[in-house]
Length: 386
Image (cartoon, rainbow, N blue to C red; front, side, top):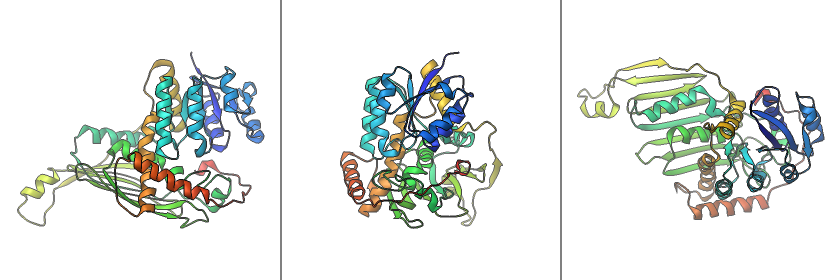
């Protein structure tokens, strides 16, 4: 069977997790090289099936020029994503990028231009799109069977992180090296699902609290309000300092409601459209009769491996990717806009234009210039609880 030769840029904990899901388990992909100086993790990689044959390079450019790889999975710190992806495209590589796609929207636009020029595949690791529940929600919303969206509420506060997590790396939770907090590190998945299923808003107002629950300089608690072109509204709440936390995705539509919480997807349908009932019901206090059904779909939640396999099959056979890298612009735009809205203390029109991009980049740069030094602690991260 045909396969792609995959190189990995950066060999931290997340890259090793990807390698464990690929090596000896995926016919379409073989990891043939890594670009990393992390001797400890290189030794771990060597112990995986086929690990002895993997070539190790000091720099991504050396790896690309070796002829050992067809595609690259970039797992480096966020600030390096754009430059490394563009370099890979310029060397004729297909690129699969860990989230977030970038730190600010201009660099994502630059990556898209580089991908378009190269003609190579550009994927992003939005693994939660492989969850059958979210795929079902998207299918229902796009079908129009429940009418237009009236309100969306997302509360994702079970991204809990202890201080030790942030202390485990010099780049974590800094404006200079990471470029943001919960919006850029944990919540890109949720921001992506939000826009993927419900579309992009036309207005946004957000309140981002910096270091509210941790000794960090970036945001760890966010509340945002949005408005859509059809008049619908939405809220998005996320944080890394709340326990036990919630994971709730609620979409109210003219014909009822979709509610995903505690691993179950409930669909509540009204006997008639809400808009019609409001106009026609004569009794004042009534409301439409409803029926509720658990429609949680069966099916495998393939996570990161599913994204990687689909990326490989796209290259090999032209099959669809889980998430094209170009789509990463929307979730990053939401993240940038939330911080910009909070810093500027104003409601913003969406989508962000070039002037807003530049304003955000300038304000981020000012904060990065004042990033404080960190004392890194030796921490063994437990990715099974991530």
